[in-house]
Length: 114
Length: 112
Image (cartoon, rainbow over all chains, first blue to last red; front, top):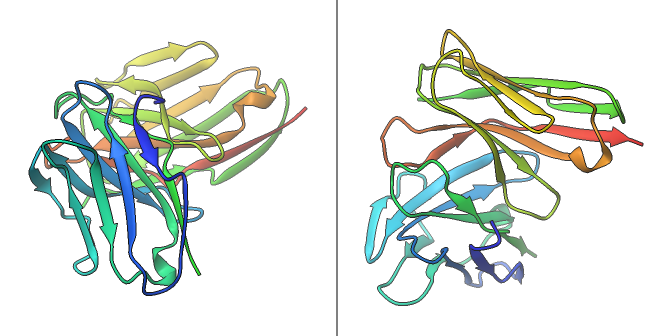
């Protein structure tokens, strides 16, 4: 999983600020998934993107959260006006094709809202 | 919707002991995946199972896809300290987009 790069590894934000989490998929991978892990819980799906397209955002909160995967550059998960409840680990996974179950995960970004 | 129930929630064992954990699903699906997450890291795929009854090994790890297709277990033999971590079962979501549904995890601690 070292091939999927996420940054920053740790991010501290005050309530009301914006958080931007970046994910560079493995070389040759065009499918990106974002998951959120709250303390003591499993990972929960948020959004699935391909280059320039959001395919499935059924796990995204309705407000303040957005994601993109531009033609060039990393995928971005953006959280506006963060609240304490947004504190969690956010993981990105990439795969070369949709049906491939061997999606590789990054090391995650740990967001702390103070 | 899909739900995965994983047990036990946590285990504290002595080095050298065998470990068994399991996962049950509310629905029937075609894949069981087992991941390990070490502290501060992302999940790493350990074993993938694709058909009912399948028994697959990866070193000291063995996993089986239950005959009913609603359950799976993961065994670790002769545990060692580096087995410490959280073990998750997962399935592909029925929407066929490749997204995964995870269980709540089993936290394993090994006493040297």
